[in-house]
Image 1: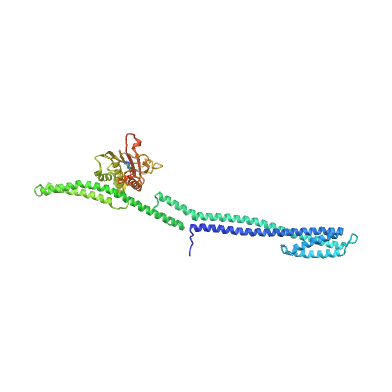
Image 2: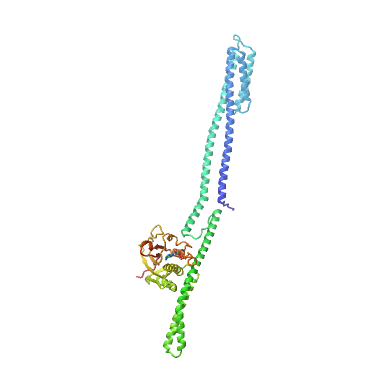
Length: 492
Ligand code: ADP
């Protein structure tokens, strides 16, 4: 069976067509009804004229009998002719009555004319004939009255029918309008509303694509276009990530070169000593040198492995990690680029754990630390403080309308430098992609937007404060991160 699923445009056109057809139909029938009424008024008018003519006829008949004036007779006959002409038209409803009236009028005319041939005078009257004519006249009046009443009643009935008809058509139009608007609401407005709700859900991060479950062609096309746009956005997002990751890799490479330098020179000098002393030195010392070479080789292997791990494209996967270790690893790569005038202080417990994707969290930390180092220049002090805050404590974020009150413990990490700080006017923009205050070639403006994205992917929050504006004699920037603490069953 073929089922027809009209598009939204077709539905709107169909509604217009139905309303248009209804209005045309109602207008045509109303015009026809008015025309019918008009005809009935004409007939009723004729019936009234006929009745009037009969009354006049009877008046002149009476005068004629009273005064025997020929003029009265002529007048009576004129009205009689008029009445017969009116009756000759086949318009009246009561055909039987009309026929009887016609016959009675003919009889009446014959009697009146034969009476006139008798030429009556005041003293010469035929009372019997007069009485017969009078009786016929009375009968004619009664029948004319009945005819007129029938037409009047019919006209009244038609007027009342027309009133009902108008009321019914108005009601039909109203009901059709209501029905169509309900139908349109269900089939047009509701899918659009659903689409809007789903788009809102996407904006809120609850959905990734819009489901193509609508039967409306336009909604399907719109959904497909929206999904395509989402896919393109996703691709661009990945592209941005790659760009930022490449920049981070550049930083790491510089760090790696620095990190490899020490163990390699250690290995090299141990090898040189061994070559010179081979066979002459004590065996135990030679073994110590070899152990050192092995340890240093292991150290280089670890450095290279962490670089490779960072470089690899991996799916987002969270695991439980010691925060201090993660920060130290990240700092190690930065160390080569750290001016000697910069000191770093860590206040992080070795036991503090986070639930994070190692690679991405390292990328976020690297971006934050690099920015802090750049803001401090040749001299400065960098502090990293982390602690767990319990499930009952709430924290407020200037970027969020309400304080965060989720009932689970959080890991709070503060990264605070005493660098140049951020101007208040710039502060709201720093998480925007491509926003940078650095000269061309020094910044691409992606770092903090990626940090924000990574922290959000971990269901965490990031906040920035300008120390400058809070404490007059101190400058610098403080980034505060909140990450949900990993739920580890507590040992009893
Ligand atoms: P980029 O570092 O490429 O400019 P980011 O998104 O990492 O891009 O940073 C955006 C801007 O935020 C920087 O240009 C800088 O002005 C400001 N910024 C970020 N971190 C700090 C900081 N610790 N101190 C001062 N300014 C900062």
